[in-house]
Image: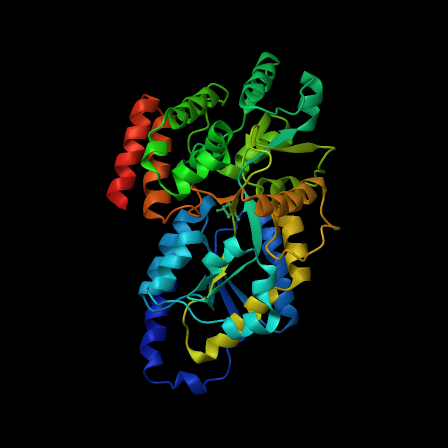
Length: 422
Ligand code: GAL
């Protein structure tokens, strides 16, 4: 219903646009933002930006499209853009932004970027997604990484668990929880969540060079290799540790299982920390964060960007205000402390961050220097959506749910799907 209303409004706006010379209209002091930040932690983080803009006199028109990972949001965005009614800005991931940029749909914020020196503070890897041919058309509000695990500290204490350093350690820890009658692994059984977990399993099984060969370079021998088969076999091992009701569960409900002590651990990007924070839980006291076992030293990133579409002249001031707010160092600090991510600006101090946030900031810096800062395949930062969301999510979820039975079959399906999508 919401979508229909939005599309209708879009059609009406388009009809009026012919009659009213938009370039002469007064600036519209409203930011219309499409996003999928509907969980407690996500909404709290978004509030930081809303409040900042409110002080500058901008009203906020929320266009929330629930669904972790943003697949549903991307469908809504496509419809709005096709109807000639793009939002002021949209949360967007990786290659989705590049696709819109290539189609000539995005605006140009290079003047503001130059004035504020964004190119000096945003890691080069991210600038690939926020710029096109040297022009800035999106801004990064954060850097998330997917290779984390989140544990309930009281359960760890009860079972005498210690930080698992390898995949085998992880399995041994899950066994301990199982033996103690606790659900070991809180999992949301949705394709994007299983695929996001698999990113970590692949990194843990093959290491950063293998990850890059397979997912960034799409090297067929790596995709078909015994290492990739082993990664699928490792993923299959994790199946034995979920509760029976995991299918379809939202990611934040899985986080809630760990928060409440119904489960030991969740494998999830650091947006999970936003849920612990929203529940007033403290890092080190109530919950623990470790890198996914066997991936310490690497950061599999996704960054939340706001893409700015070409809009009529009267709406551009609102875009500039949002871009400016999002790149403000204080906004980035306040937002990311709540969101669980780390600032996209490398010049923001880690002072206000908890232990997990401090580790996140240090890890990003070190990984950037070592060349182990790599885009998430599941989050469309390694490959375009046709391969990431399209093929990868599909093969991983079919394998996880038993529709694809063996790791031999899984790698064959992965290679076939990727070759068709190329
Ligand atoms: C990711 C996004 C995060 C978080 C998560 C779950 O794709 O980058 O900010 O919102 O989805 O919704």
